[in-house]
Length: 150
Ligand SMILES: NC(=O)c1ccc[n+]([C@@H]2O[C@H](COP(=O)([O-])OP(=O)(O)OC[C@H]3O[C@@H](n4cnc5c(N)ncnc54)[C@H](O)[C@@H]3O)[C@@H](O)[C@H]2O)c1
Image 1 (tube, rainbow, N blue to C red):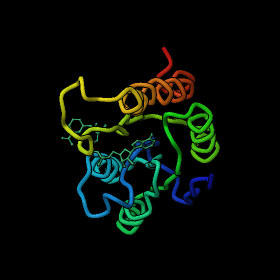
Image 2: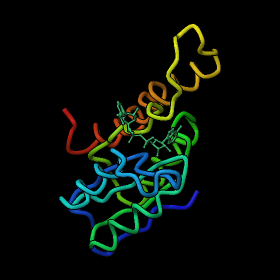
Image 3: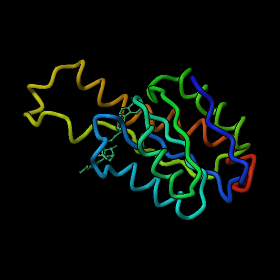
């Protein structure tokens, strides 16, 4: 997995915003992308962690003078999440904001629950619930050690 690029400007704040955008949503104003652009405009160094490349969103933010980078990782995968956060910490030293945006919703076929097979149910739970636990746990370590320690 490539490391996020270090910025010579140094971040005013540090943020992890995951699942900003992927190639399939390249022209959409997805929630993650809006969030990333808003945080970046307010001085956060934004790291997008998504199944697909966040290249277009990252380019848009950096072209506007913001700090952004992208990592490709499956946030339902414990080892991949740990690796992504290790890369973020190596570059930025801390995590101040986590946006648990990755998830499955709009692309799901609407149908009665009795027609949903178990594999789809487990895929949705992993994307919408397991990922939140894994990323929140990984982010909590630097957060508790840093400015948000009790
Ligand atoms: N759009 C809505 O009306 C709506 C309503 C309720 C909740 N939500 C939730 O808000 C969030 C964003 O919604 P959106 O419409 O912008 O979604 P979206 O599908 O445009 O973006 C979600 C992103 O999550 C990424 N993703 C999915 N599974 C992943 C995984 N395992 N690992 C890494 N990345 C993964 C996708 O690649 C995509 O870039 C989602 O969690 C969605 O469930 C959206």
